[in-house]
Image (cartoon, rainbow, N blue to C red; front, side):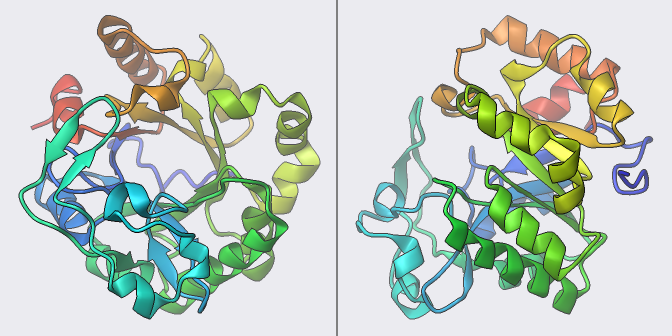
Length: 283
């Protein structure tokens, strides 16, 4: 069952900055997370990989070339090698190019969580570019880190991949966690049925789910809540419309946000939290 105290009824829907505050700072950087604190957001979503030397790094792409100009596989790199990389000042974020004014460094998950402790809720997304069984180790390492840092009430864990979530639950039963759904994923009926089965939900200890904004039907929020799960929508006001599947018009997106808010959605993940706070009538 989802813990009602995790997403306060008074505060809902929570506004989570997608990879920080990417309109102002490069994605998944300490600067972006610190800006989220300054803006008074409820939380942030971030992405993690496990490096070759078993360090959890906050990064979105398995190949760092888009962000750093260096090609490779981040899971095959060591932390010292990653420390030598620099996130570019100017980035193509999908639908536009942003000059952020300065370069940034890649951060360790442990350092980010320590910075955000007690200030923001954190959605730790374990990245999955395939259903690689080896990624179960990332789930184990995330579970160990949460336990060691005593952050059970500050974080929840999501993934498109069932393996890290299974091992997360095995290592630390009771951590808030659940599957993330995208328009691409939902077309795989076999995988969808497996992840939505009651057996799989119990095995991973699901307490919540993330869904792409344009996947919501008129009763999605209600049906998920009836199963005892919290639910969030991603990515509101996205910088890269390709991740939503079918592009949503600006008017329809605003209508969706208002409708989902009225129906009691627990949180939104957004690339533009300042704009979303304005739409929700928050200062």
